[in-house]
Image 1: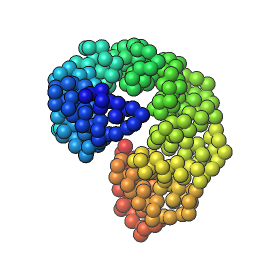
Image 2: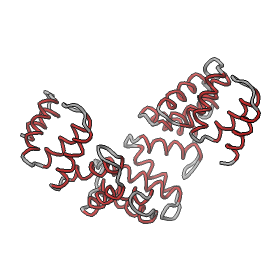
Image 3: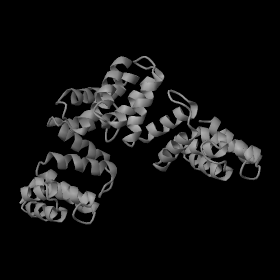
Image 4: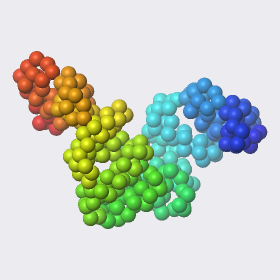
Length: 324
């Protein structure tokens, strides 16, 4: 029944509702792989209405039966509050359980917990050791978090987290994951080329990697690429492209891009001047803590751009910006 469900889900004749029905039959017979699949289907609304509480229920059932994928997903549920209240301690214990069984994803996520103090105290050295172990295990077809671990090893070498700073090694690790079409690695390699960190500065190569990352949906890369088009760095100036990239990144919630979009509206960069729109965007970013937006908002209040002059408000925002 499980394999019938698998065929309907992944085979040539797809039928997600039938796949769900067969997985459900196997799940109700206490087959852990079926329980894990049912959790995934509920979690993503595949063949059935999305129900995060039911997803959690089935992940928990499968995890109690020793299913590795379910233990991983259950950890994510506790970490992010998916179908259950957030519980970082439980998430940590589940990732630790996976790591102790030698699972690459578990090793990477346990390292992440030690990096950011999720369910445990921050321990950068321990995080580095776990990232390195996960990154160096497995083969080229390894799982997503094996690639993520390689990225974090690069980060540890770049900034000296838990190990001796080595920017050349950082570049090598980022390059590995960038060549596997991992957007975060592509962003980082673009950044290193842009700044000449661990490699000779090369703006054209920076543009190449920012474009790859942006095309893969990385919002920071969209912003960085927009700035390159704005300033003509590694590419000819193109205000229209800069505006579109800032807009795309801002719509996905990237704070710096929201500020830059405000700049475009204020100065007529790739779009007609609209001081009211600029004010709204700066205000949004300023309220979320952007130092640059706070300063620009102060300028707008001081000079009455798109609103009535208000020196008290100008001083307020200048002070907010200065105190960061």
